[in-house]
Image (cartoon, rainbow, N blue to C red; front, side):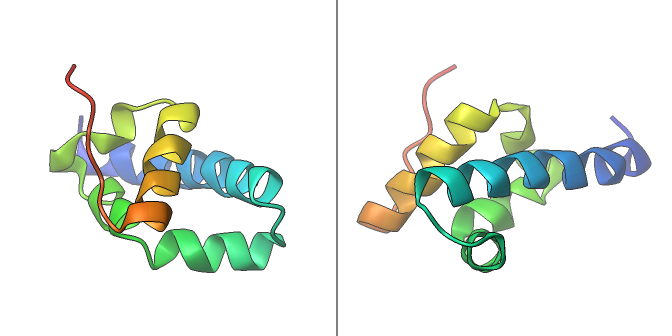
Length: 78
């Protein structure tokens, strides 16, 4: 995938993930955005080479939640 295509997809991926964080963690959208953008998961997500963006929103939320609880991210074997 080209960098332009990846850059075009990121807002949609992040918007879905922020909506899920806001809903499941009962947070205002602004707080959900702040927490996502300050996470290690987001750092990995914005790097196309990691391929983290391939995961579903549910999986990304699970990884985000795990990081919030434990401070680590354990990626599933795929």
